[in-house]
Length: 169
Image (cartoon, rainbow, N blue to C red; front, side, top):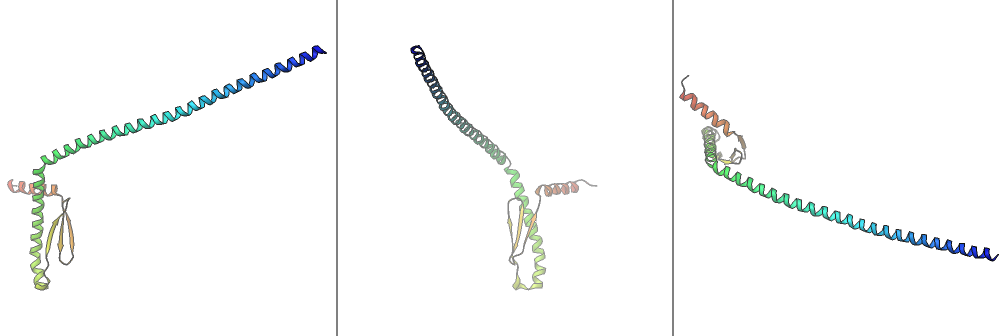
């Protein structure tokens, strides 16, 4: 019986040691997985930060490149416009001529109207030019008429008229 009691105590001692070793190994694995989880979290945050920095740097460089391209385009545009000043002056003179012709044609029609209406109802006409070739004819009665004209077409028409006058048909 003594032998049996010793064997039982020995077996229970071995079982307790086995359970302690299992708990110790399980605890070590839990610590190891927690460390890897923490490293993974910090790694993810590090990658997010790195991605954000790369994005911001690329945006900064893109803006610098676009600013340079816009400056180049602006200088090219200024050079083009400065080389075309004579053309612009010719277009403006042509617009002035057209406005004067319209003013004269309106003034020719004005005296017949004024004689019918009487001298107290005189009508004053002003001509204002806007960008894009729009000419506004304003009268004192509040009437307004807009005339759009295409300068290129009128210049080509003037050239055609001068060609017709020069060449006998």
